[in-house]
Amino acid sequence: MISIAKKSIKNLVISIFMVTVGFHAFSQESLPTKLDYQKFYKTKTLVVLENSPFSEYNDKVKEAIKQNWVLNEYDFISNEEFDQKKTNPNYSFLVTSIVTFNKDKTKAQYNFLSLLLGEKATDITNMKDLCSVPMSYINVDEENYLYKLESLIRFIQNHVSMVSKNPSIISDNILKYYNKNMAQVKNKTLYITQEDLPPNTRSISKIRKLYPGRVKIVTTQEIEKAINNKNKDVVFLHKVGPEQKGHKARCFKIIIGADDAKIYYFDYHMIKNKQTDSFLVRDFKRLLN
Image 1 (cartoon, rainbow, N blue to C red):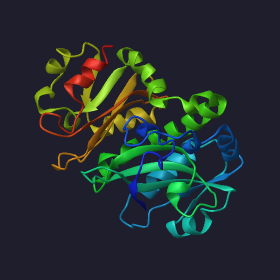
Image 2 (tube, rainbow, N blue to C red):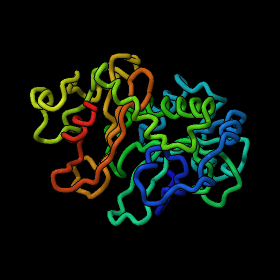
Image 3 (cartoon, helix red, strand yellow):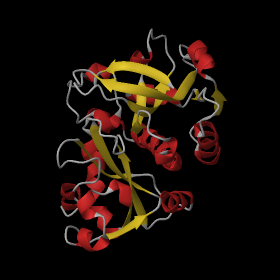
Image 4 (cartoon, helix red, strand yellow):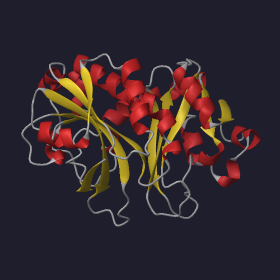
């Protein structure tokens, strides 16, 4: 895990989920360019493994990459090798990092998965970021998010491919682009775990009073099976929060397609009072729009 302290929105570059958080406005110079995406295809992607012998991440990421990665050649390296090779422009890197945000009084930390270009930068925060996605809140058990890792990797790959073919969207609010898919959720079955629902909405009967679409309260194993089988009928909630640990933080809510790894919905809220670490009533109502 690479540590990035007090990272600003500007430094996250095109960490696409962070565009709307709003601590800093993007400068045009901070965004990756069409040329950066072209450079990527000439690189070899090095997937940085975790040092911890107790982490299941390494096995999961190896399996997901071997089964899905088709954009360019790849290999797996250690954190130590990353430090040695990160300035080499012949490489790109799929790496996890610990991210915090400037001017964030909560000082919350998140695990991100990022695709970076190798370049002569003094710090990882200055490396061109082609795509980053939040995986989890810091110190959350791996079992809360590793079952979705394949889908996140497929999303990063699809995002890079899409932007490469349509570079005009680089300067746009990319979340607005993805949230246009929201209307399609009603044609799918939304998989969501009971733990990711607010305490007063943990039954199908209560959900139906808010949202008439198809919803199924499932286990993490059922979501993983839908991802592995690329079930075209299923979208699932990827929630990033402190998992009821009582910490003040952002709760990110992302609905992703099990088959196409496409984002159908994105939003976030600060956890406080009735705004719990969950998919809120207002989120169900937004899906009606």
